[in-house]
Length: 374
Image 1 (spheres, helix red, strand yellow):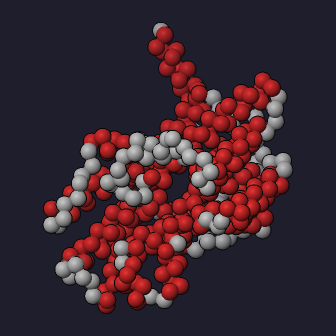
Image 2: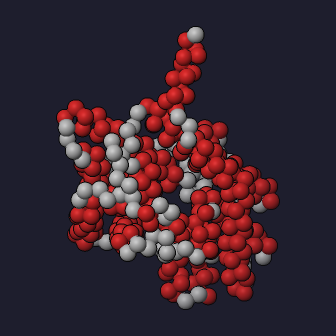
Image 3: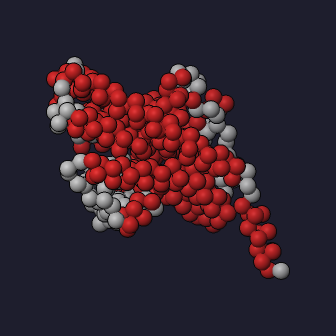
């Protein structure tokens, strides 16, 4: 299938990197300020506490961005078994080593905390660790003993796999029945069902499925169609945004949904005004965007441990004069550890994934098969 090339300004997507940095810092502030909530309410203006209390909305922002980036990456590529294998291997290399390092880092911190603290927290079992390593902890309803943020990765993996699978199915059906835009019908149809599940009009018997959050990913996919100038992409995008708005108004405003709608419109506006390489491009935001994955993974463990250690030093009660410095120290240490993780794990993974992008899996497997048959 022929793909329509994205506009020139969408190639670098520095604004998306900056937006990732903002989303990551929002989640960091939400979690770390939550550990000092009562103290901060007495020390900071109400609007600052309110802003930090909504930092968790960085999560739907990540979902929308994921839909955008994966859709741009795959485009209308013909999904064969070799293409699917290459996609899955590259995603695994991109995500797994850093994620696994964060898992064992969290366990090591937990063991250390138990050694120096009178309060003993349970350690994850081998089964618990394996479930986390393969993104199955929510599907298997495993208690999140390691980190409170890993659940989103379980959903991200499901998003990727379903998007690839639905594209493959649509290509098969389209080829046989000559139905155009069948993939769009599949993902929008699931989007409607996703909102019903998200709004508790329908409950799923399986825990941890991606379906209730699919419509956030879908917003990013529809924005990507606009970037690629697909036929009627703008009309489809705004019809979906209108549908999201109507359900939000009718069933009651939901912060996650509101954030998804706003980010979707914002990304469209950046494209429309040719600002995808001009907004959120400061060195600070670009740096935070670069380490956003590692920062997201490590901040709950290391940031909370910094705050907990400070509390232990003052015998459980943190003097008000130290509250803000301790919060800042927790943020700085989280960024430093994230930077180290980026250098040690994420950067090599990115390089390897990029090299695999140039590997012809079909010829590789056919060559191996020919050798084995001799």
